Image 1 (cartoon, one colour):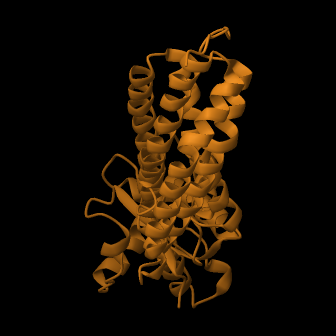
Image 2: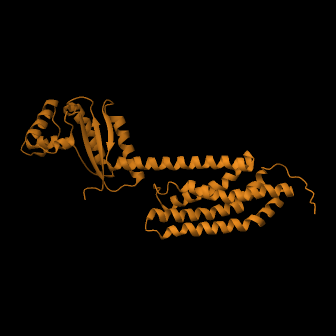
Image 3: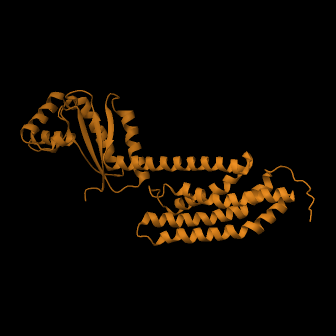
Length: 321
């Protein structure tokens, strides 16, 4: 099918008739040959091919003349002959003033990682071998894929940071302790990391639909976390010891937290019946994350409270009947 992905490498000489300069043509040919050698490339085409075909045609189609001419004047002459003979492809390859030209690159269907690798290899070669005065830009589906992946990644980071910061501030205010507020965020972030790790393990690509997954998980999981830590603080003030406070907390809020998680998992699992694949992924990954959020509240949060003792030293409390 001629390659399923395409990219346009735009080379701007910055001056009128700059494309006709034989020095520029030689550099462009070097770039095109380098891209042709890349294992991900299927085919390339540019004004270089047009000039070579014209030169071969002027020499009885002998293959040894399928090369660039030796002077700028000869290159200009071949382009003039092609243009006056009705060459319709030339306007697709060069600009009206012959200052900008395009190099069409076709590849097989590539993943986002391969697109980044491919374009990075071209960038490196351009920087090392082309004249700095030549401005190189990209257009086409491959550059769009890279731009979209950048936007998705930036959006994921921005959403995660904003959600984390807002909820952390809220937890510090509600729990009236900076140290306890930060500790309480670990069980909220833990299920997000587990869900993202599962995505990487299963090869699930981050998409625009999954971009909101991290803040949604944090925003929903924080409800049970607040319930646990508020109750723990109250029980610690009553009992004076971390272990007794933990026993009392789990015996009172453990069941409501578990039932809340079961409800969330059941509700988000309904997304698995959707015909939209991204929605299915979102629902199942969120359900998976909520299960780990429950485990974090039952095991990770208690372990941190016993280890860091954020509520201060234990004290002897006299129980009054």
